[in-house]
Image (cartoon, rainbow, N blue to C red):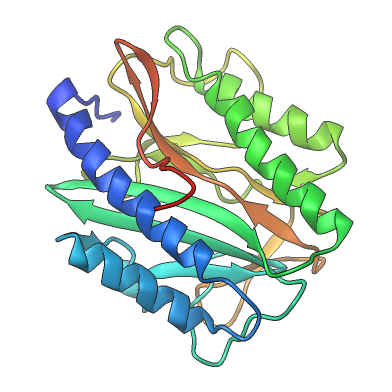
Amino acid sequence: MIQLKNSLQIEKMKIAGRITGEALLLAGEAIKEGVSTKHLDDIIRNYIEKCGAKPTFLGYGGFPGSACISINDQVIHGIPSPEVILREGDIVKIDVGANIGGFIGDSANTFPVGRVSESARKLIETTKESFYRGAEQFKEGNRIGDIGHAIQTYCEDRGFGVIRKYVGHGVGRELHEDPEVPNYGKPGRGPRLVKGMTLAIEPMVSVGSYEVKELRDGWTVVTADGSLTAHYEHSVALTEEGLVYLTRVDETL
């Protein structure tokens, strides 16, 4: 069942979203060659807790980190580790959630480590832009399929694959609420979009195939063909004023 939010609840989600976005931004600013993914995770956890919130992912289903940090062909759910060290040319996906006041923010971005390949740069740019193409369709009277179709066509027209096994979702009191928000699909299909809906739209895009597999750690998802992937996500709300970004913050703090 889709849980619609009133204006007060959306204001509370903005608080969770701001903390989420700021934690993600701080981690992104710390990315450089020689840094461990555990160090990035510590930055995220410390900031979220300093704000009086809780890292949503910590302990979620048994997940051991405060954020999912995935490198290169890792799509999502990478486990932070002091033994995973960033290298020049890597691309790093960081997925963050913060819980405060009974509501959750959920956001992700992909960061380059130093100079990256032209293919990686285009992948990151395409994934980010595809999110905004999808978010533009989050308006009253449209349907979930309009969001996915916009993301899919933008990415595939540029020669990239859209991951299909993992999708976006509703977000609010729970990290994963109805409805599912696929990054592919046909326009005019799926649940109708109405005011009060809050979604986490999150395209996951690959240079190669959209097929994926899970590693033996039970968490980390990688592309089946070993190709690079990127991930971009914001929590968004549909209000009387239209589309509202809940987790987007300024590029500097």
